[in-house]
Image (cartoon, rainbow, N blue to C red; front, side):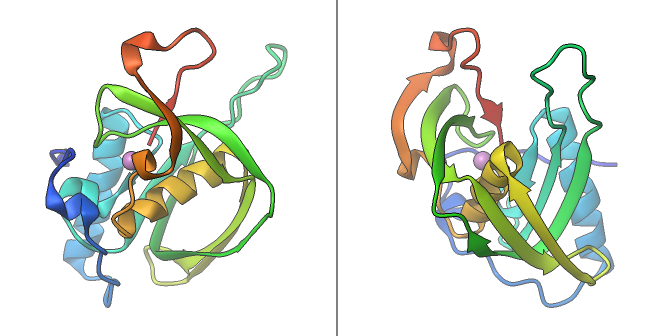
Length: 175
Ligand code: NI
């Protein structure tokens, strides 16, 4: 398995509209495997194909809901692979949270995101995928789908900081 190099800002591919995936070829399957590996090694909780220099609409997300209660163990991480993802519904409410991005190393920012989103697309077998995500998982999907439209979180951030300025409890999720 190959770990791909992560493209960082200001590389132009990060600002392009990625192309819709037409066929789940063996090259596409290899790309998906390598995106999963690259995300895990980084480490991050999400990755979009333009971040590995491929302008195609594919994202991978792997996230474990962290338990606030030390008595309750954290749930195991769940892996999602979504081809041609779209947000088809969202809540009116937004929540502020701290995000960082593998393509913008050294920084994090506070971003308002929808609290709940419904994501539609295809899984890696080409079968319909639909998921209603809340909280951090919803945030990660919004961040990754933005990457497919050439949008970075800095475009939406209320405020930005250098990562070394982060205080306890403020540590961002890297997506
Ligand atoms: Ni990112």
